[in-house]
Image 1: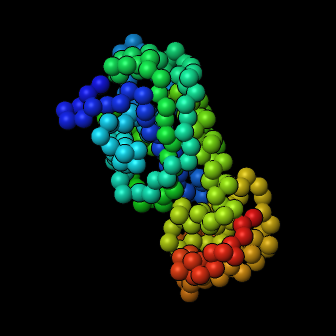
Image 2: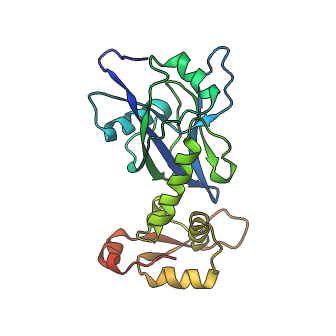
Image 3: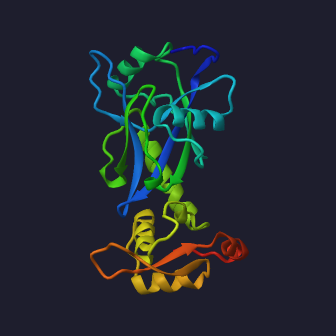
Length: 245
């Protein structure tokens, strides 16, 4: 896989994507199952990622790799860290897999990591290339991943937590209309702490950019809750006063 028909692959630089989605009141990460290689046991899931082409930017590579492996495109991607430990490939199983698919399996690879927050219900991953399957996994159920992808995954969660203190980024994960209970649940997952219901709602509504709608939930077994939406224009006018939890 050293060279495609019209592109030369750089064997030393890759991109990896941490795609997070919120569904069923759980924060989930998009993982892939790698192509099975004969006589190479492989029970590790992985983040979508691959080597870059010599004639593309890092952003272009991140977009291309994500589309090739999962079928997702036109979603927000942002760099958050680079990983260049000389011993990134520690597990023999990973090295054996690389030997079967790459021309330079032992080359030192520096990866540039991206993250994205999407509305999981709006996307149906369709695996291709060396991804046999692509599916959402609750972040609490993530086990041992390929390469150093656990390090990348947990660094992305820390980045998300830090960013939430500066920007209400959680709204990128919610549907257009949501309940305050959904919003609180999301904040609690990201911040890894339990929030007082009354205090949370008071602070959120005080921002003025979480706007109540004249609508309630439908088709629920419990008492339907009021729906809200995030008003981006109002947020822009109050951005300098934003304080998170």
